[in-house]
Image (tube, rainbow, N blue to C red; front, side, top):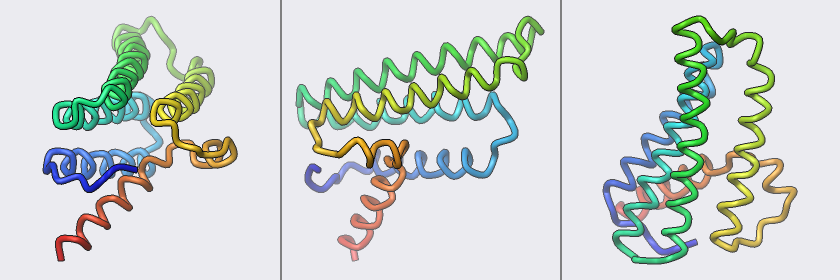
Length: 151
């Protein structure tokens, strides 16, 4: 874990991520929103890391930013395929939904292993498997710490 983040843009991105996490939890009925929400999450991850790269010039943070960009484009391609397929009626979303959900879980697992490998954190496999998208907790904790330090 790094030091204190003083960049207000990263704080705004953290708040945006929390809002998207919340919306993904409460709104599971629109399948395209779920895929688009994950694409937006990866885009915000990229922007967060990109801001850090511009401040720190760290190769490790740059690698994380590139990884986030790759995962963003991967999920975006899936989102565009299903959005356009639904619009022009060449893809039956309901038919492909189970496969896409499995693929999303594979992408999320892969991302967690990949990003932890970049930062060389020593999390055990059990924690990663239980906490598939534990970034929400990390962001919430960081925001709480920032608020407590400001008071």
